[in-house]
Image 1 (cartoon, rainbow, N blue to C red):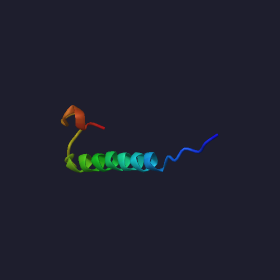
Image 2 (cartoon, rainbow, N blue to C red):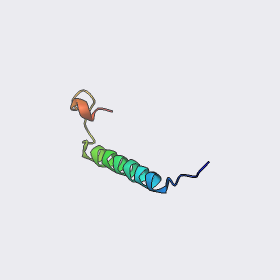
Image 3 (cartoon, rainbow, N blue to C red):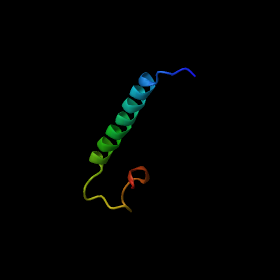
Image 4 (cartoon, helix red, strand yellow):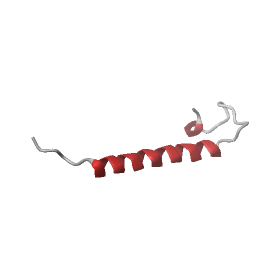
Amino acid sequence: MSVIDLSGIERARRQYVDMILRAEFIRADKIPKTCRRSKCPRDLRT
């Protein structure tokens, strides 16, 4: 059984996850602190 090198795939996966997490943090920073759930746009509700 041959060994397959997955280091490139793993690196790409980590970069993808980091990008998603960074986008979520930026999005969370844009939500006003005083925003209530009923007054927020639907896509910003958590």
